[in-house]
Length: 93
Ligand SMILES: [Zn+2]
Ligand SMILES: [Zn+2]
Image (tube, rainbow, N blue to C red):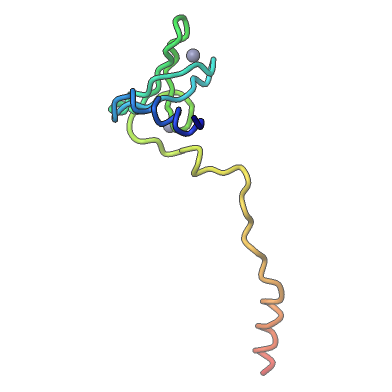
């Protein structure tokens, strides 16, 4: 059995509205409340609540800073070399 099939079978046990992610504090499996969009750690003694998208303190409303939308490696806009030079050339003409 491949790990992919095991993963699919595990996800089938969950309700469609439920998600699982890791607790940012203890990395234990956490239940995500889809209605509130708040993750709650299932470990006794932790019970940490967090936003599952930004893995930060829970906040009302949709997450505005999802991890995927804020990549650490940002591509800088390519410098247009010689743009000023070409404008000068046009003025001369
Ligand atoms: Zn926890
Ligand atoms: Zn968030």
